[in-house]
Structure formats: C-alpha cells, structure tokens
Length: 370
Ligand code: G3I
Image (cartoon, rainbow, N blue to C red):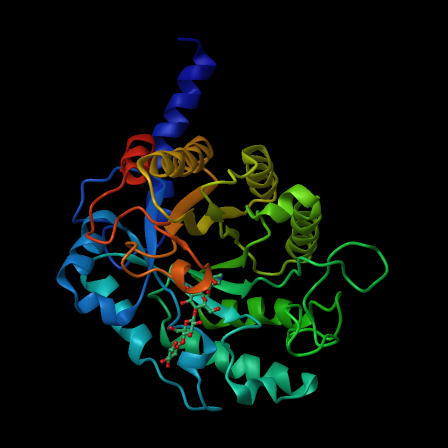
C-alpha cells in the first residue's frame, strides 16, 4: 500500500472513534445495542409514550439520540412569563441519562409554538425575554444536552421584501397570520436576535454544540422544482457563513428532511450543502427525517421509501466526518405528526405501528452499520 494511503488509513482509524464520542453523551452511547456506527441514529420523542413498553424498548434498542418533539418549545417550557415548566422535558432527559442516550435540544428561537405573552411583546422588549428564557432553559439542562437547535426555520420560502427577489428572514413586517411572520426580526435582513440567541446559549452551556435547523437547508417538497429551494439554501448559507466569519458560536446545520415517497429529493443538492457547510468547519445533522407515503401504503411504496432513506444514509456515511446524526421525526408510525398535518398521508418512519422494522430501517442499518 502506498505510504500516503497507509497514513490516511491510520488517521481514519484514530479519528473515527473520536468523532463518535465527540457527540457528548451522558454515558457510553447506545449501550443497549451493538452499534459501531459513527453516524448516530436518533428520534424525536414525546414524554407520555416513554411509559409504553414497546415504545421505550424500541427507543432503547435502536436509537442513540433523543429529541423532544415538542416539550422544549416555549409553549411548554415557559407558558407564562417567568413561569418555567420542565415536567415533560425533564422526563425525556432523565430517560436519556438512565439509558445512556444523547439529547438534542429543540428549540430556542422559532416563530411557532410561542405562548401568547411572547407574541404580545414589542421588538425592543424581546432581547431581555429571549436572554432570560435561554439562560434558564439551557442552564437547567447544562451538561446534559449534546446539541441545541438554537434557531429554527428562520428563512422564509417566499420572496423577501428587500427588492432582491431572494427570500429573507421571517419577520414582524408581515401580518401575524402570515406564514412568514416572526416576532424575532424587524425586517427580512435583521438577524440580530438570532445572533444573540447563539451567544446566550453558548454562555449558558459552553460545551453544547449550537445548530441552526432548517427545512430549507434542503427542502424535499415540490417547491424545489420551482427553483425556490436553491435560493433558500443559499440565503441560509450566506447568513451562516457571515455568522461564522464574525465569530458567532454556531457549530452546525440541521437539515430537517421531511420528504415525500413520490418526490425523491435532489441528492446532489443535499451533498453540495453537506460539503460546503463542512468546508466552513460545521457539523451537519439530519434532524427531522421522515418520508411520508400517500395512502394506501403498498409494498412498492415502502420499497421506494427505503430507497430514499438509503440514499440519505449513503450520503451520511460517505460524509461521516461532517454528518454525525441521522434523526427521524418520531420513533414509529404509531405516533407521528404526518397524518395530523397531511391528509391521506402516513407511514413516514423506520418502524411500523406495531414497532416492526420496515424495509427502510433494514436498508439504513446495512449502510450505516447500525
Ligand atoms: O399541547 C396541545 C394540547 O394541550 C392539546 O390538547 C392538543 C390538541 O390537539 O394540542 C396540543 O398541541 C399540539 C402540539 O403539537 C403539542 O403536542 C398541537 O396541536 C400540534 O399542532 C403540535 O404539532 C407539532 C408541530 O411541530 C407544531 O408546529 C408537531 O407535534 C411536531 O411534530 C412539529 O414539529 C416541527 C418541528 O418542531 C420543526 N420542524 C417542522 C416539524 C413538523 O412540523
């Protein structure tokens, strides 16, 4: 073997275990399964389901990262101003610690699932509100959360209103019922509170990795074919690069990847994003994967779904020095947001309603060595 290849192999052998443990866990990762994978499989979870034996057994056996699907959002953690409630989130974090799983925190700045009292604040009042919230929430879980989704879905899918024709940040200039409305920015270029959110989170837990999570880092919906998606992902990239260059403590990009079995995503676009974020020194987490199926669910559609999951796993495996987490948005099809939000769609996850592994799980476990 040429000397260079021997050197590369040695570097790989040394770095691989380091990467695996760089995702901070409360103990040894995944001690219930025999996984040696460097890309860690995770799932979003809900506190009540943890009491269900088959649910918690599946979680313990197959997943190494837990993400509260809703219970770290403002409406749960600070339903009244200054009145913090960690009932649901503590339950998830305790379960994770007991079972040596990592936790991704989700989410500190988002325009949705905000209590009415936050929406009633003026822009100038919000910095103090945000600081107190992040100090308290991130501080409460300090040392127990590997990575936080600090900001979520801040880029709109629509043309911005700065005259450039490019999308911008969701902001207050829109009507509150508009999907592009957000209390967290004054206009489509105002990222000052987003930057503050990263700084507050870093101050509250300097060891947690801080992510910006977005459905438009890559969005698999049909919008991609209208040419919007590329612009959205470019706008996100430009912001992140600017923050990184300015020393803002941003450590990673969350690509949500809510997909549809009928419309396979543009894998080249995803890979290009992985590469360009990696070049900025950022980690990439696949954060909210699901591949919904239009009913009736057939064997053929399940196989198509497995192909999409498999391609994502191949990308993660190929770039495992950048992509360190492969998180599905739910554990099993028994509890999923999909049928509630997409009429006549279901079955987007790796395990079926009886917790049987689907073709998609078999496929990714082979590819990632789970
Ligand atoms: O908490 C109330 C409860 O009191 C009430 O009884 C019940 C009646 O429907 O509703 C409960 O609120 C629900 C909430 O989840 C908490 O369970 C809402 O109706 C429901 O709309 C809400 O949906 C969540 C959605 O975010 C809100 O936008 C989904 O479960 C959750 O999967 C979804 O997750 C988001 C990510 O955070 C960000 N990326 C997109 C992703 C999918 O939309």
